[in-house]
Length: 117
Image (cartoon, rainbow, N blue to C red; front, side, top):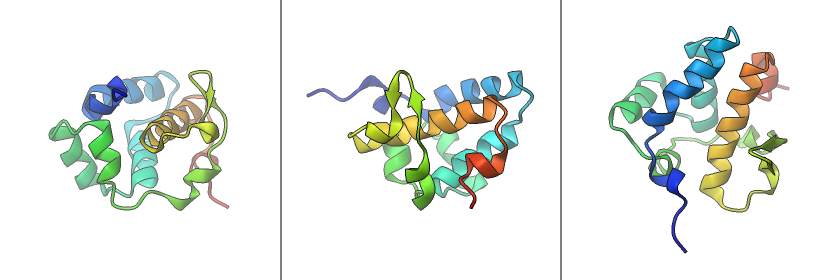
């Protein structure tokens, strides 16, 4: 079975859309970066390096230093599919990130987005 097209897309090609979506709703690039760092464990410098290298989504998540253990608390629908029901691991990670950016754009507080107890 062929890989989904998004796996080979660079994170850098989608990243500006995340920023635009957040900024349209009064949120910031630094909040988007904080979400991505929380989800993946990349430092800000490592994140910027991945973006500069045009790293694809599959590699971006495969090389993530420490995926957040709290990401399993992310629930809900993105693109008509419940994120908690996605069986393909890389696709689930991508959709987790999409869901978190959606929550940011919808005005949720960062503590809620980052699943802080």
